[in-house]
Figure 1: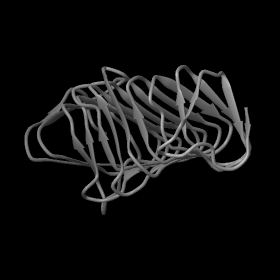
Figure 2: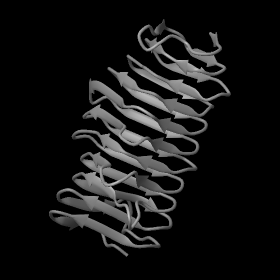
Figure 3: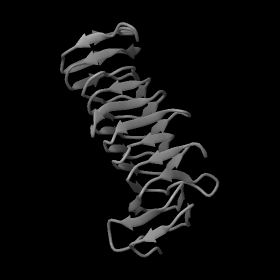
Length: 231
């Protein structure tokens, strides 16, 4: 299916059961019954996915809203910009966004599951998060450079939050805001760790201790439980 310009509308989506959609540009409104690969060299705008779907493209992706009743998997060979909300209503269904460069959530947008794990991976770039809610499941953020959120209204809600960053998490002026049970540090190569937690939480890591070059600032309104040393 070769598409030029806008495909479908928000009120009249194109229903497909195909393996691959190629587009030369414009918004794409599709209800797909299975996994879907998008092949293109232009920026793709994803407006709607109504079922379990895996969307893969070598291009930059702009997400203009995804409402799913299953797993959501978005893989971009460029960047991912989230302009509107992503959600899955199926219990324990996962949401995964992976980009070669940056993942950026716009102000006021949310990514939410129904107690399913949420994963964001920006292999060579940064993550800027806004509202991420995994219920009682877990969130994992991996960035080649920095992990930040937009402002004091941003929030990550989960049981476990796992962080891996090449250049630090949050900043002194703008901490990463969380409502979590456990903070798990995979690795932070350089830069600091700046977290504000709305309640109590534990801190753990995936090795023998948490060591980084930079400040470690964690603010909580409750208890802070360390299971490994901080250096």
